[in-house]
Image 1 (spheres, one colour):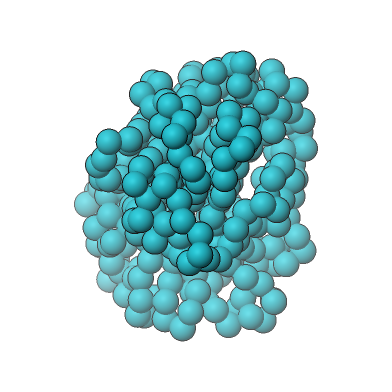
Image 2 (cartoon, rainbow, N blue to C red):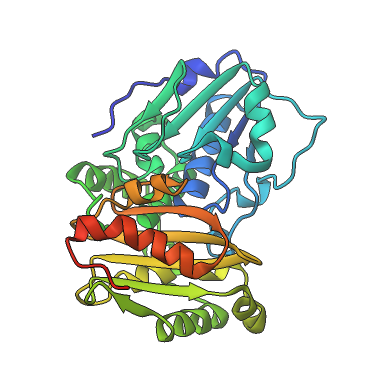
Length: 325
């Protein structure tokens, strides 16, 4: 259970301008928690400058109030005395807004990634929390919780729990979700439009990915690779891959799912999921990334066959199966 260890009201009281940012390639929890904090600070301090920085906003998340205010480019003329980093397991993954973080006198880090090793005066890392949005909700008193804040934080929790399906969903998670629902949010709209609804292109990519997937370790691990030329053929972007890893992860009999997709020639992003045995955060960390016990990722360059082999070498001991070479 998250504990109220940070007082954002007090931390930001004397701030002139506040920046909020999350990780590169933002997902539902990243966008939801950032916008939730933005609305909260606007409520507390309507006269302060509060800006959110993310490299883009996925179309599926543009139902959230305030998404159009998100800044997607660095402006050297703007300065902030406080920077709040959310849902970011590695400060270097703040991307283009990291100079604002580095220059800020007050740095706040709120996260739930077990791989996060950042230390500072205003740091709250709660690995047992389902989402950064859950942690943020615990920091906000009932009298300050508005419909807009609740919509953002509920979406963040929905996405990081797979609609309360993943085993990171705790009794406290459900209590927090119930508290947010009590604000009058449209749960059906949030879940359907942001999580389940897919474009035609997304369905094409999903179908292609499933068709070209393959099993290793006697069916205990499923792997699929999406080459950049495939994305180009379908007119797709990396945003169209959202949700693919979750579909791979429901393959019957598997313990680990790995999705490897090419973002530039021989430059790959890898998403890992597991069910019970394998701690994929350790696998990802060994390969330069991080994440959670059952959901993690990393980036790599080179030949995708080598990337698959590197993953298998680390997964094999935990699965307790013979190598397939």
